[in-house]
Structures are given as C-alpha cells and as structure tokens.
Length: 226
Image (cartoon, rainbow, N blue to C red):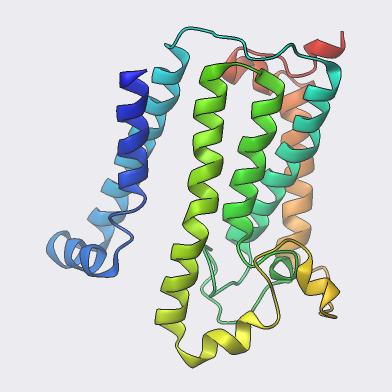
C-alpha cells in the first residue's frame, strides 16, 4: 500500500507541478523545449509503470462478487473513454488538452469541453466495476478522481490564457457531457471525430477479440461470459 501511494503521489505531482506556467516555462528555458518534452514524457511513462506495478504487487482483496453486468459496464464506459481521449487529442480545442493547435473548436467539444479528461475518467471508472477488488478501486478510482479534479484547474488556465476569448468559445460547449446539445448547439462529424470512431473500434476489437488485453495485462475481459 505504501509503495502504491508513493507511486501515485509521484504521478499526480508530475502532472500537476510542471503544468504551473512559471515552472514549465522556467524548465523549458533552462533545458530547452525538446529536452524538456522528451525528459517529461520518459519520466511520466516510468511513473505510470511504477503505479501499475505497485498496484499489482498489492494483495488481492475482493470487495464485491463479479457478475456479467459488471463487465457490461466496462464494455460501455471503457470504449467511450477511449473514443473521447482519441478524439479530444486529435480535435482542435483551445479550451482544454489537445494536440491540435488550431484556435477553432472541433466537433467533439459539443459533447464535452474536456473530452480527454472525461474520457480518461470514463475509462478508469469502467474498470472499477469489472474488477471488484481494493487495489483496482484505489488504482482506477484514483485515476478517475485525478482526471475529474484536473478539470477546474484546466478551466482556470484556459481562462487566464485566452482572456475575453474564453467566454466566446465556452458558450458553444459545456463541461457537462451533451449539455451543449440541450442548449441548441449543432455539430457535424469532422475528420478527428471520424478517425476517433475508427481507431476506437479497431482498438476495442483487438483488445477484446484478438487477445490484446490478455497479452498486455494477463486478463481476458470476455472470460466472465464464458
């Protein structure tokens, strides 16, 4: 338990402290942008590996009996989460986390203003139901809580960065999933959204029906239906 808490604390720190603008800009100024991103990516990956390995080293303590509906919850939430993460990274979205630097809003922002964060939370929450043990609750519950807790900080940073433009962009989307549609916002299927659908479908088929999940994590998600 102590090792897991230490690993998770490091994971949170690595994704919180460098995000502070003055710290991030100072590090980039001292080591250079390329060195910073390569080093940060490497350390973050190692921290994530430590989180998972320390969680797997914990004793298995069941919290509830598993039923087919538990896996069904995962089959709904995990692919949804993967889709939101992929589409969020590919889509233009100056209001949140993205790899696309365009100042416009992609179609996925009509679903939610923070698709990457809500997608990661959805993926993590889905895995809680399908495992039913203490270490999974701590691991995936921690990821879900961290993702949701990051949303207010992301909102604050976007407001500071965009100034008056933030309100003009934010009125066309919403933090709450699908709330923008109820406000009358219309959306079309753009290329990032289409690519995310195709990538999610391919990845889900590989993980569930081609042994991908079993080979990577040692567990067959559809075994409970056998």
